[in-house]
Image (cartoon, rainbow, N blue to C red):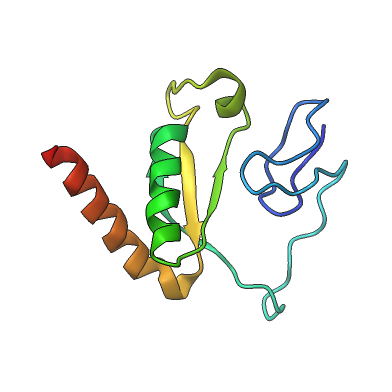
Length: 115
């Protein structure tokens, strides 16, 4: 099975590009980075119920200049369903952006609920 080397999501055979981040898939996952590596660790700040909610959140964060990664089961891209968390999408950001990102999400959800 192919894997995304960035998001570490597993995909079914025949998929060649990660639907979350666009990275080319690989046959085996590279080892996780050790603490102190140059790469920034990401933390989970939100769990979207489905792909649509995740993309709305991504748009709000991008608009504020906050980069995020969406992680979830690849099944959400092929079936578009949520069942017992199966279509759930985790939103990850750099730790320095976490507080601001959570505020943006709450504000966006509040605006959405008033319309």
